[in-house]
Length: 500
Ligand SMILES: O=C(CO)[C@H](O)[C@H](O)COP(=O)(O)O
Image (cartoon, rainbow, N blue to C red; front, side, top):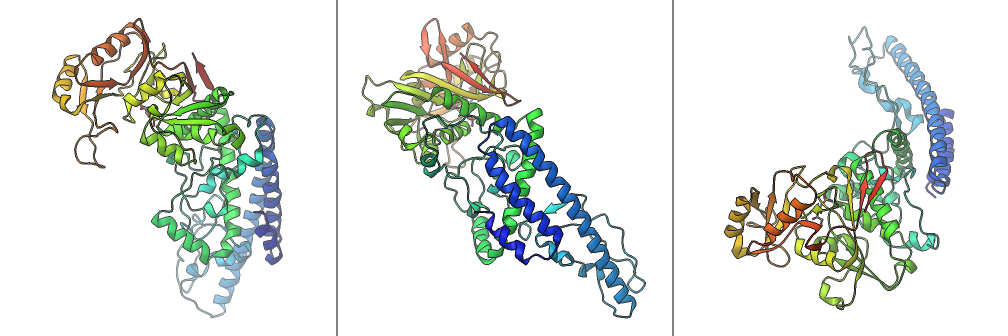
């Protein structure tokens, strides 16, 4: 459907070069959709071919356009030579000289200044080395979601066999961004990933227009004809993203991609197969990708699954994908076990002990872990350490508000660097948990071993009056205290390590 504006544009285009480009783009677009259904190695091969073809085409068009520009220039100069003086020749050589190329713009920076006897040296036009296919007037759409629409070279896990593609696609939040989404910023993309390294298309969790994007919507209504250039841009961006992702297949992946690969694998490996099922989901950036993967299951597969949140942040993540979790563990009967609990951590050591707490509701997270059959912890390689407190991260210590001075004194006595977590800028004063408690962020010098010392430290902290809970999830002599059953580590090269 997206190819239609391109095809209709063929009729209005005079330049054979542009016709050539449009035809090829349509073919590429169709091929690209076709490729989405292929296995990764095939897709990679084919997309390399597409890229080569695309690059050849672009080079051709580029030289054709430059020739055209040169001849326009000499025509203008010769007219001027005949006495038709015009001031500011350079400014008349706007890309309108390339009007046949419609939205294809060639910026010309390093062109030598053109000497003109009447007007002296002309302002130099900017000629860039790179051929660019632009969408709309620059900046009209800002940073676009369409950048993630590129060929999905890294669809990590196929949908489970019995999943119905139709129902999965029609499920809210799983639909691919349509052309109307151009102009919205994908909420879960880190800046480093936008259109650069993250080739996996993400479902759109109901984007919220910002004032600037509201402007874009207005613009897009006003310039209906920009739909076609937007598509060109989409393919061009996708091509760039593909080429970068091909390169990154051989090198490293961005943190977001690495996390997504780990999250997708963790969900695919541990999605419960029996019904009724209970799935708990924590908070943190990575959980968005867990929920994204879960939302790809069909309605049938999600039927009779009860979701459990570990607090408001986790509820919010699930709500963005139309999952409605229960918000209190007391709604589960005492016999009910949560089948799987997906969450993340700040550091995981060699024994799979971990520290956690940036999201705050540490006590609720512990209770969910204790009530779960499997705690699946998902991290990226930065968080994998030999012993805890290696990276300088703090863990949360949840305390009653009255105990603040008492606890902080005791923690500092145990060699911790500890401070009360502030609620700024949301609230003035201390951060208050959903249960009305305060949080102290505490870090220690790196522990020497990944076993005994963890347990000793955890017991010291838990033994201080006023401490409700803390962020060390471990197993020791004294029993199991929420240590993950498995840890999925997204590695730099895109592989996923499974520990435990
Ligand atoms: O408290 C936690 C998990 O409940 C973690 O400390 C925290 O969420 C990690 O967040 P991110 O994935 O954004 O680094």
